Amino acid sequence: MRSLRFQDETGQWHRYRVCTIWNLENDRFTRRPAKARLVKEKTGGRIGVLIMGSGAGFVKIGRSRAVQQNVITSLDAISKKPRGKLLRQIGGEITEDDGVIVAWEG
Image (cartoon, rainbow, N blue to C red; front, side):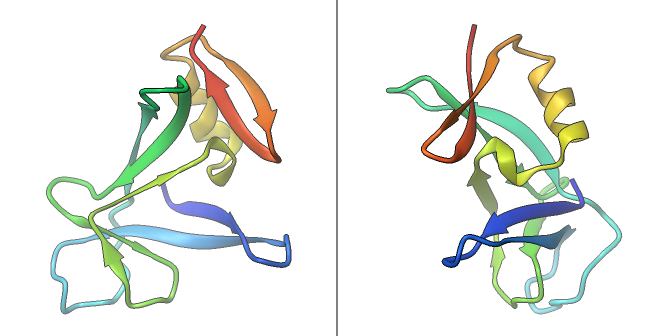
């Protein structure tokens, strides 16, 4: 996973670079991409994406200095190719719910 898309408060989409870092003091980007896997909501059954650092690393998103251990986001935040690879595992259906693309396990 090398980039994520997020919508700002005006409704415009912005693409942000994503990478794995291991040293919290070093806020520079690395060449190591982040990992993604599917997560399922316990109550509603909706499926989203968990973005985490490769190995035991942290996730850095965009130019901000904020570094996180993991990020949970909807399916429309990732590109079509990684989305297809992840959804091939479950055989679910993709729908749009309140302007957000989500998957339901089949």
